[in-house]
Image (cartoon, rainbow, N blue to C red; front, side):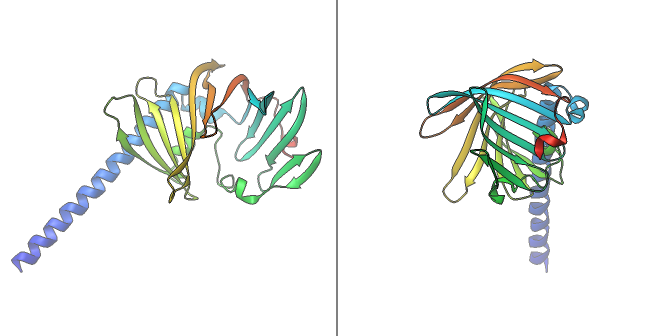
Length: 234
């Protein structure tokens, strides 16, 4: 009986230690992301953003093009490729269904491309990360060089994203989305050159890392809470 009591006691201590570590990891991750929210302009500002427009310059197939994104809460969004002032490709989600426009023809998009849209509530991702109904977050690494904080964010759909926040500015510097957990493959985007648009701080340089060569996009315009309506997603 004495041995059994000892085993039970050790088991309880181990379990409580694991629970405490898990809770501590979650609270630290939330604290870091809340600091990122403050760095970007504060929770009041970020929560007030109901629409967001961005336009970036990049090169595709040797041609200078623009990427245009439009978003509206809770989950409407569109992506356009503009070449010489003409929209050559568009995909969008109207809140329930995804579509594509190719060569002037509207088609239903692959539902898998928009599977993460259904549960979306916020335009600014950091607000979603601290919503326990959408994400489970945990601090999994404070690197020895103290350059970044690494946070694992698991979405309700099961999608996993690793977030790297700068230890000084608290701006997001890199995000890795797990594409195939078994093969350990990632979709990696680097974020840098944060600038202020109105009261919002936003990355103006995005680098999409690929084995075939990185692609860089430079933000040339961004605004929020104006010039976007429901008809943009029809």
